[in-house]
Image 1 (cartoon, chains in turn orange, yellow):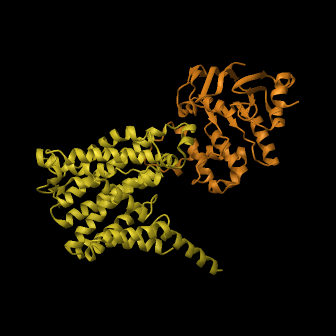
Image 2 (cartoon, rainbow over the protein chains, first blue to last red; image 1 turned 180 degrees about the vertical axis):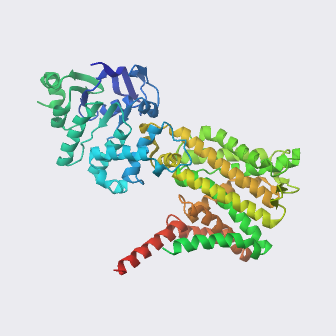
Image 3 (cartoon, rainbow over the protein chains, first blue to last red; image 1 turned 45 degrees about the vertical axis):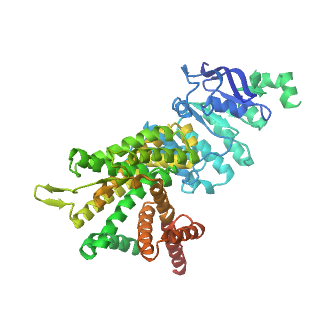
Length: 246
Length: 321
């Protein structure tokens, strides 16, 4: 399998703190790659760099052979990167369907369309319904987004990512704070994404990580402590000491 | 249900019949209200939808007014021909300000728009070319004759009223379409969560800039009409008091709706006119009214009316089997 995304000597500093320290890393096409590590290891910063939300202080990012480091988030998105956020990040005043349809607007190329009603775009409607049924929120589509439960808002967040039809999906703790049933649902959903997406998954729920991930990267203090198959990483004594606590 | 049809029909009839019934004093006021409504609507695209609070919107209003006045005064261009140029000049100014302003959010956006409007204010205020603090007087408004079918003489108060009414209706319709279009959806998205919109794949600055330019164009058209109406352009049109006054209209009428800004323009003008007749301290009373409004009628008059009406409808609905 070839790499769809590669990071070379990626570095990000916040003042005196080096959150990501010269990380060289790659995502293979069609794999689920989990990134784990203790709190403060730099996992979210890493995703922010891979999605253009934050800019690196050094190093390069290539997606499908195109250099993207230094570009804005919307450029990363147009190159197929879709991401969900650790803290729920939706359009509060809109309905659930509108949230997803707004994300799906990218399929029109641009939104400098001033006359025809947004509500009349059938293709967006269909895209939203597809994404909402994938996450199991179709029956909630007319609700205002902020009236959903926390777990449902997390699902909406994922539906918005899927509606853009990304080739690379970055998920930041999709299972944090949600119930048992929802966790199972999300696990199945992520497993199903594998067929036509490459997935980077940050997650603290290790049983979900071990069942889903093809490869595993352990991030400690902004550096890669280990990277390999689940078995390899679990067997790594340094990782056990640093993170798994075994 | 019936009210939803009766009220718009009544408003329409009143607007059409008004020039045949009203005194010149009231005609004058009606024209001013329509123009200010257009101005408030243009600002609300920024404030109510994109949540970009501009304290410099009057600059584009004044630039629209000065364009027609200068063209007539210096080059003898008939005021009617100046209409597209007034709009274009205001949009160009908005583009230049916008390029820098859309890089900021929140309080910084407020300050940068204020700063630019002050620059325009002093450029016009301190220049002999623009008549300094005296401003420029328009000699005539002009007239046009469409193949003998439609003869409009804007120096007639009634014709000017209909000219302004039609343009305000067109602007309102265009804004309605825009707000409900995909572009409008992006504008709302900028207001609700711009960074999320970025992550989905939209360059929000570009959309914010276009929104700013459109709003500037609306203000320019309103300024053009205002100069025609009072046959006069002076620097106070660009002042930050003027910008503040438009914002107050939005707060009072209800930002984020189409009716709210129109209602705000109406209420402010009426308060100014009638309270001003009683006392020169009318702004003090306006201030108290505003404080009460902000505390008691959150969101403005129009959303309050809608809330009350739907609450009553729901109550009635429950009574019926």
